[in-house]
Amino acid sequence: MLGRGLAVAAAVAAVDQFAKHAVLRSFDTAGCGVGHKTVTPFFDLVLTCNRGVSFGLFNGAAGVRGMILAVVAAAIVLVLLYWLARVTNGWMAAAIGLIIGGAVGNVVDRLLLGGVVDFLDFHIGAWHWPAFNIADSAICVGVAMMLLESLLTRRAAPREERRGDLPP
Picture 1: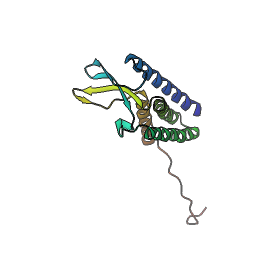
Picture 2 (picture 1 turned 120 degrees about the vertical axis):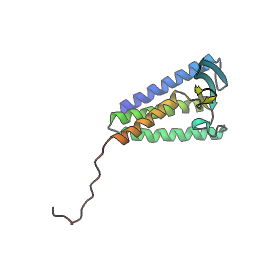
Picture 3 (picture 1 turned 135 degrees about the horizontal axis):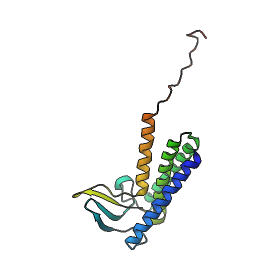
Picture 4 (picture 1 turned 180 degrees about the vertical axis):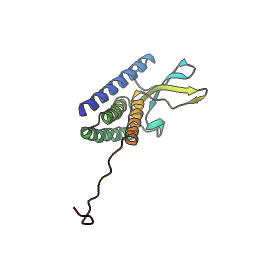
């Protein structure tokens, strides 16, 4: 299962980086910037740089704080790799791979650009969901898969050792 999870992670990270590169080129910039292109009445292509955590929280995290976020994300990836090496379920391996790939894609942005490039902006009228990217989507789908697996998979309850209260 390790190979499956790593393949998913590599594919997610590659697609994420390719998409971000394409967006940066479409806005004619090599790094973090600001841009906006209307695509449909409910979807815009935007260029934002998230220097914080999810949904732009702590977005002022530049410099040392940004590097701390990258280090924390890298540490989480190491823990997930350890978990992935122990998984025997293909569904869970794919879920962990999605999360690892998304985290790696965002860490690469933090290290190279100082923040994460977000570009997908869905909205209804003036109400906008926070801009996100492929890596963010992969992380969310991976977490949802883990939750579904834990809710839908029936596990045997561990048996307690009984100490002499019943005959052998």
